[in-house]
Image 1 (cartoon, rainbow, N blue to C red):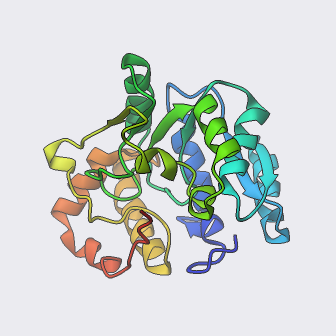
Image 2 (cartoon, rainbow, N blue to C red):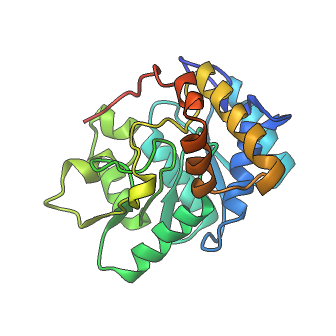
Length: 236
């Protein structure tokens, strides 16, 4: 809730509901997820997120605001399971089909990480999925003190491709728009996301996929101008 660019963004109003409500709908539509847990901070501003999680029936783990890595590890331990499917709370337009593809790809290949972001970005920003074993993440959490790694959970994997077998999901040609912004980081992103929901919900319901989003933006490219000037922070 303490985002410097857009405080309170994950509970911002999207079509009469909180942005996180829409994300939860999308995660619950996935076929390959066993459980969902919210990893938030002990900051008093995030009491609202713990309240939200209790209302919607989602497990909640609270940890350090700065040590996101330890927070994600703690959240995963809370619900159990050996494989982490990490998504961020500002990906309001996440596509369930892509999440399931990430999980299926992880189990079908000899790899340590499956990702459609990180060092190779071909999908629109905000359509992100990352899958990796909890054991590997615990090893990074025990051994790496670099503040950038503690803040950006999977960064260590991408910095060391010689050490980890990373399988990148590449977007099909019609979806290959890595400069498009589908995530919620700025007030302009909220305007864009509301416009997308208003356009697609009447015909496709609230859990439309990336195919519908791409089709809309091809027909109405003026929507992309709403947040095209917003800048993404790149960490290497």
